[in-house]
Length: 289
Ligand SMILES: [Zn+2]
Image 1 (cartoon, helix red, strand yellow):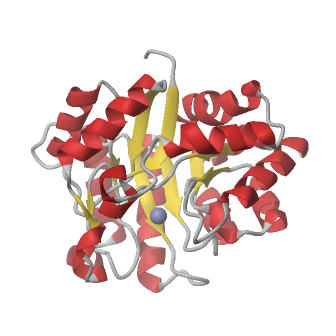
Image 2: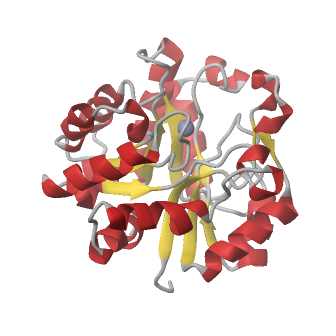
Image 3: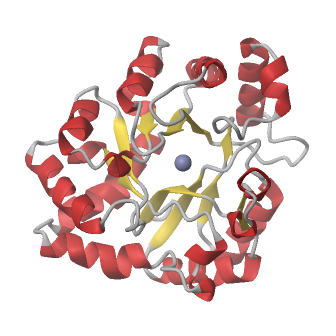
């Protein structure tokens, strides 16, 4: 693969509009997304991890068309999100059956699309709790990860339950270097974030630009501290764009914000080019190899 930046937690297309009762949560605007991805290519992005999975309006052929239209490699996902977004069959099938379904998508392909999933994610927990059904998903996805060696990437709700997720997956036999615990920036608690890093897992600062949830100054300041404590090799970046109004066309920041606004902020906080490359090139390459 050509050397370049990787965004580790995005949704090229997603539809949570049914549960959320908000049409903004249906991101299905091919041309507008394509235009933004073409700008990303110009900025050096060569790969995106798309973590939309079953129950989130996944559309492998749409993503594959986007890949061809933009030249950016887009890795797709298998798995289930969290309550209340789990498909009905998750409630009725056994853990082993769910694990086998994920394994089939990783090794043979998603449905009859002929497109293989590359990672397991984003599966996750609710705020301050892992529900019984989320435990079932965690157990089955860990099984699939152990059987295939695939990377797992999780969703935490506002950074809560991150330690529990890391411990659970490690205990189930998933290698820490293949685990990415998501949305840790939203915890807004540097000490907690460091305690998760000490588990040996990777974490996502993957909601860059969502200043209403967490100001980017916090992200920059905390990345500086993580670097000082020697854990920057376990952090990846992304924006988690999920709504039409996140795109420029509808007045949002758009994907290029990470490169045009956030990276200059990191430089202002004293992060070096080498450290920025670590976050966007070396760490993703190592995790996904
Ligand atoms: Zn998420």
